[in-house]
Image (cartoon, one colour):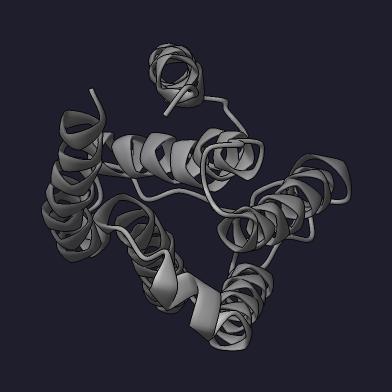
Length: 201
């Protein structure tokens, strides 16, 4: 695929900004609380998969139009979410995990409906590369929802206002289990990504 070089560049840029974000967020006075290493890695992986990966594949002319339509739908929904979520987090400070979960489930539903609608073409032009990406997006949407649900339970819904918590940190015992699960699934997602790049280089 012609966009693989761009995908690799985007990955490097996102993880570079991730390191800068980690340093800034773990400053004592940072809004939203400190972020753990597993959660920082997950954030970088999710941002990469939801944005550059879906967006660049949406413009990749070498893949069937039906696949590009699905990637375009997910990319548009994710970019809309980015604008809305940043406003809710840093603007009015009224972000809730329920919003993220609802959006994830909506995206997953849209993707499933589109795959069913284009079933004949999708299965005809099915390839391990494209199926792998669709499966990876679906997996991330499910994981994202699970993490948000568990986080909301742990902080008892206290994610709003100037003192709201948005991230799990490394220090508090209450986040230990969530960080452990996140770390384990980070490896799964990374292995899938590496396999995708290995097949295409």
